[in-house]
Image (cartoon, rainbow, N blue to C red):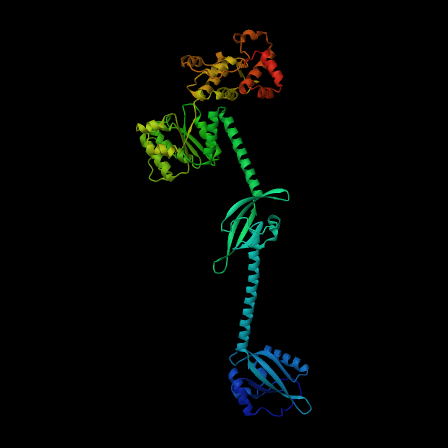
Length: 598
């Protein structure tokens, strides 16, 4: 080939027909051009490749068959190679056929020189390298895939190593016979020079270990995992030791915090329910346990023992604590209205139903419904309540559709429901539905330790805000309270304290300030072992001073404080002295001085 503008020279000769046929047989294209890209000769293979006739090619210029950009690039390649004074050179180029389809060719250029050594024409041999290009592309793709496979293999190896040596603090691999194969460097401190397994080489084996490492006690969880080959056969075992020291310490701390929270909650419940007796402490513990679950609870006990308060505590300590607490006394509402109150009614369901009513069950949605005196429900309401608890849905009176409910039901009664079941007055299936967890609150007469703390609580509760100090209970009044059988339980005690606060005139509540019915109750009850007797305390009035009349007012006050402290600590001198802020010897001297016979 040659560029434009060069001196035109006539070629000496072209290839003969025999040579052209030989090139056709070799499937090699041939083009003979002058130095200005004019085409002098083309073999039949070349014409066949490019789709032209001999007349369309010979005598024409090469630029007629190439896009301008391709021809310019061809000129640049030819010029650059000729500037290197080469007579033979090769390059790859995409030549278009008559239809415009481009294929890759290897162009082998040979310059024909005249006698003076100047080029006069160009012989171009073209080899179609389309197949080779495709092969190169496939080879390049295969190489890229191989490179990716190698990279993936390396990454997989790293991943396996990371998994193997990252699943535990100490990873040791043994063969099936227990011979050491390898171990992670991180576990060297734990493993030391050990070359045998700690655990039996059985997949899934687990055990905990305690090691002293660098003078520190550390705990580990050990386990064995089988390593399989590509055929699924066990080829080795990995012994994994994972440190659990921090986890165990954290668990211990969490347990301590949980117990502390339980103690705080128990203390809060005891303070609100004012329970000092062992029997009520058990009730408080049971309340805390019931708060953790959502089961139905039946609270049993006599009238006035505090069943509703226990229900409120269960609700407050449970996950439903932030939701409504709705209480209803089944015995206080007429039977004709109770169904409407519980389940609601639609407008016009009965005479007087001028508007729709949701009902207490739907009002307690998400929270707790407390049904007091559930033993007084009539049989028809028992059936409807049972269905509501079973299906967790209700249908209002007069309604034609049911509504889902999410309510925890706590029931209470002062009746013996088992006896009512035996008598056919209470449904057995409803009984077992509501009495999943029964709680029995003992009557006040069976827990005399709670009487005086409850009395002090009610004094604080009902004292007037403008009173300078909380009133005290005299010794005789304390004995009166302790000796009373309290048929009305805590409610009766509260009423008695409220009565005494209204009747009392000084800072001390005397026995004469309390209702006369208390004395009547004591006279009517049968003779029995007397309840705990409070220590001698300061007298409340002239009729109760006796031989203590010689004491000065401030001494009487001090005697009262000492007596109360001894009473709270059941005669214990050491805790009473600690509370009063005096030494035990001083307390002993005061006891003798004030004739406090404990």
